[in-house]
Image 1 (cartoon, one colour):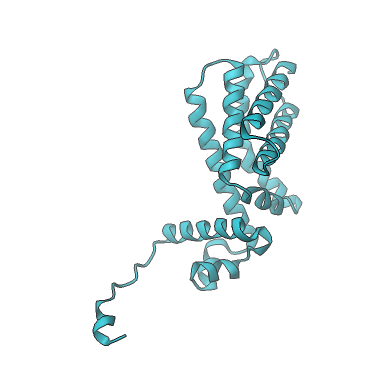
Image 2 (tube, helix red, strand yellow):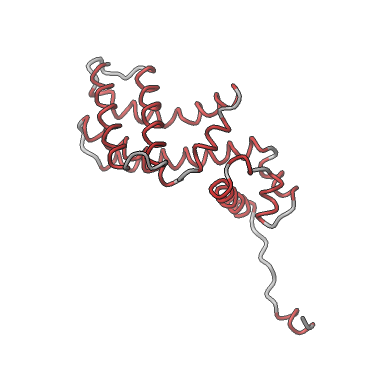
Amino acid sequence: MSSDELEQAPPRKRLSRDERRRQLLDVAWQLVREEGTDALSLGRLAEQAGVTKPVVYDHFETRTGLLVALYQEYDARQSQMLEQALVRCDASLASRAGVIAEAYVDCVLSQGREIPGVSAALAGSPEMEALKRAFEQPFLDKCREALAAFSPSGDVGIAGMRLLVGAADALSQAAAAGELAAGQAKDELQAAIMAMVERQ
């Protein structure tokens, strides 16, 4: 390349801290999608993103920090999808249960095969499991608030909310793996939520 060509090349734009974090998270999701969670390390992320390791370490510090950031992003998307759907739905148990089922399954499907690996990696230690549960709590609170009025007792207990999450995870993962059609997973989850609320 001649010196004239070098002079005409546009300068590389330096990303802001937020833009760099967004880029790193996007590359991390892509890595998990293509190679699985086991392939995700800070060094590999730096290599794939075309940055030095200190840049990645500055954003996430540890592999666990990166996994937490990915799970937190997924959880925020799930909560946002649910919130938007609840605003538009009728005030009936069937409608609310259907909206919760749809938001949960659609969010898992939108993340494809990536979220089970991230979730499993986070469940590897008591600290990570506690962190995962803390991220789930706002989603569960929204579900409880949406469903409580339809329960004979006027509330939905912890056991009911854990049942909701267990069924939602199992059915969503089955849909993501192609074992169930998405519509079937949503219908089964809606029915399970309604039965759980009516038993409270």
